[in-house]
Amino acid sequence: MLKTLQNLTAPQRHAFFACFLGWSLDAFDFFLLVFCIPALAAGFHARIPEVGLAVTLTLAFRPVGAILFGYLADRFGRRPTLMLNIACYSVFEIACAFAGSLHTLLILRALFGIAMGGEWGVGAALALETLPREGRGFFSGVLQEGYSAGYLLASLAFATVYPWLTHLHWHGQVVGWRGLFLLGALPGLLVFYIGFRVEESPAWAESRVRGVTGRESMHWREGLRAYAPTFLFLILLMAGFNALSHGTQDLYPTFLQKQMHFSPRVTGNIGIVYNIGAILGGILFGSLSEKLGRKKTILLAALLTLPAIPLWALSHSPYTLAAGAFAMQFLVQGAWGVVPAYLSELSPGPVRATFPGLAYQLGNLLMSWNIFLQARIAERLHSYGGMLAATVVIVALFLATVTAFGRESRGVELRV
Image 1 (cartoon, rainbow, N blue to C red):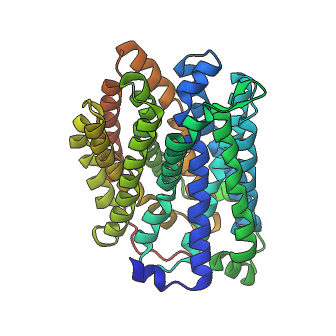
Image 2: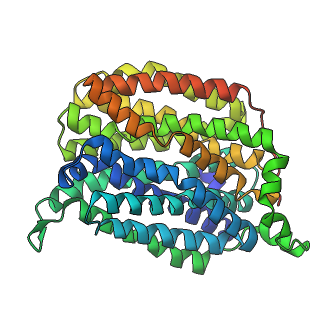
Image 3: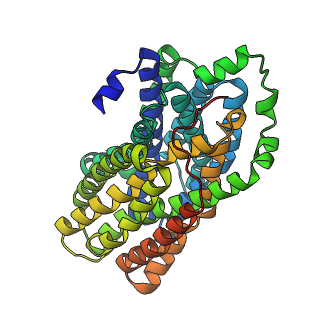
């Protein structure tokens, strides 16, 4: 793995790290909210499901960003679009710190969702069109786990910074969760790195040299219609993936705080443990997909989540829950580690910045009510653990079934 990274050229390394950090810091901003759901409910005198709508809106508006930023990337280039995208989600994250009501916060999270929806497709196109075909599964796993790295950073912030912020006052008010959202300024610094160090995707640049004026990329609708069966398959696939990911992550910190009564420090520390597992799983299974193929690797990881359920959601001590969470996210993100390569390989070149990103985010849209429904069911059952366990059984089997109908794509050449 280290040799694979060492063999990269300087432009390839800069593109790889920029896209990894862009996705990591995007996820960092997203998961800060997830950890603060109980605090937001208390601060705005609302119920958990009502605050959960902030996550729902973020997910629901991500397809808008996938279309908008995907079109810009196919038309004007991956690099400038990625810079604009990162600047947008950083600004909206900071604005959340100053939300005076839950209504305002919901609007800001919808806007954040538009910006977040564009980052994955644009970043994946820039990275995978720049990186060599050899080792694409490894690069896919590492890039996707930028998401878990961002979750890990959010866990660290919640475990270490948040307890301190709850004792800090500004104009007579506790800083608390607002201080965490102010950390959302950090991703904005990445724009300067991309501007100075990252080059445009060679595949996109070559298409301009060949005389492609952007007309093909403007007609992304025709591209979606021409590849409608593949596009519909990818939407269903990503619905399963997003249900598995968000279904095991978004309410897990709330489960640890509300049902298990763990402190923010313990909750954050468990978050650190399972995100380390997620990163390792994504890299391992992403690399494994170079040997087993994309389909078999996804099936293996998805089905192995089932035996991890009792330790993850039905045990009681922080140590057993941490071990179960490590195993669960190792497998969930192991399956996800294949996604950037698989979606990019199945996507037509002229709309590669739009096609996979839009399929990803439409899958998100289908599952955007997941956290709201999970919270309502958990309140009715008086058990977050039982609700989480049932979620994994249903979703893992659904994902495995959809994956079985897909085609193998390992080793496909990526051209625009």
